[in-house]
Image 1 (cartoon, one colour):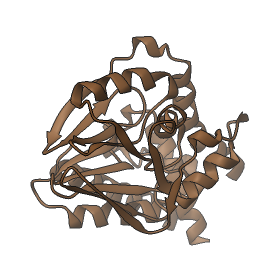
Image 2 (tube, rainbow, N blue to C red):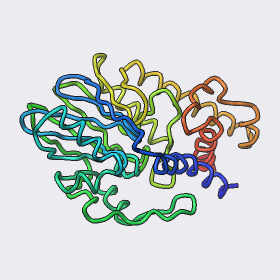
Image 3 (cartoon, rainbow, N blue to C red):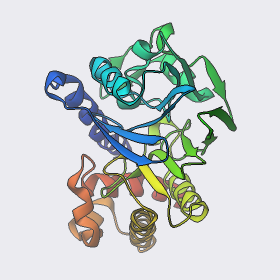
Length: 297
């Protein structure tokens, strides 16, 4: 059963990555939305990209898939004729770092220490080997806690939030523009993928999201890892969903119910509409059950 849960939970995210990689990227439209101040959001395929641009140059947060690099570069040129100077990776997953090799030739890549380690080591996804990233795709600057980039009159503040989505997650704050890029600590409107096989934890994920929610003000604009541009109220709905779904599964475990019973009883029926993304309701139950039952034991 444990082996099944491990495969099933991880497969959901891996399938999404494989589908995106096999997709005809020539048909993907890359669009830019003004967010606030000098910050914009770029949407294509994969994780949302945050951008700050101005006289000092451009910083991007994440870079989606390699085949989209030319379209992303074209979109950046429409925003500014200044050079790209820095790329921040919120974590190591390929839908957020696939463009590293292309952008690493012209800009400095920055990430948490564990992101470089995982990219350099390669991985196995549902039986498929993901080779180590080439040297040009690896972060050049790494850190463990926090750091800041100062340009365009903006402090771009990167902070590590431990054991949430993975073991190398960053949350990025554009302080003057009052914008936060949460990476995959926020899936706006649907269940998140919590990568339990790469240092992520359910409890850490919830604690990290609660922390961000407590810190931001009512006027903040939030760029999620996936989904539309968000407000603090949108993040509140996400926090509430995480609290209640975790409590529901924990309560079922306390009553001695099995994973299959929790599924058949539709313990997360209230939030079934959140299963419209690639993490379906039953898969999210599996994720919660896997960790919470282990904690109980």
